[in-house]
Image (cartoon, rainbow, N blue to C red; front, top):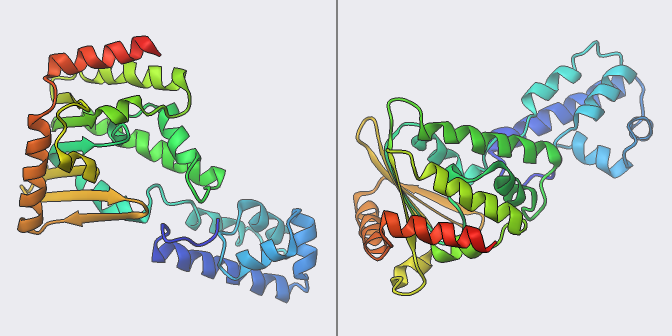
Length: 274
């Protein structure tokens, strides 16, 4: 729970403020940091990090400090402002745009797109992030990713076009059973009439397909955005030049993909092999 690049400035400010309040209440009540640490079952330096805002104060620390300092629930109440952010900072802008989308064109090179992931597949990805996330953050982000999937069927219906590189379908996330159920899920969602799913096979894949994932979104206001993401970085573009270049790349990639029918057969065969 250390402060990381993925945490927003607001979240870090909340950590520092709440940690400072714990320290003020503790000192006012004559409770030592070591005493608080012993009562909470934490290491001294761990408590110090939370009081200094380097780590997110845990609910347990807030509850113990509230009791020891006779804060009357004032410290425990701070937990509401310390809940993990549902999305990494690098994707927060994109998620807001996605919620307003009327069309989404999504290419993935290595992973199943978030909107199409099963819960167990998403949990494997988020739960094995590096540096590791605490359990509360994992649960919050898994739930948030699944909640986004309502967009696939919510009214008014948006139009979705997904192209996945063969590598994304063959990279085993979790184990073979997890991947098998994920592939079956893809076949199920591919039946939605507002969704097109295609596979880009290794053979014939254009070179630009190796440059990573990209998403093109048109909103209800007919604004167009492009989103790209890499290791610990993400960018949302509204610039016409960027959107044009990425649209051309998406068009080239999709032109080399299997047809919808061929893609369904391809995924079904992979699922049967697992």
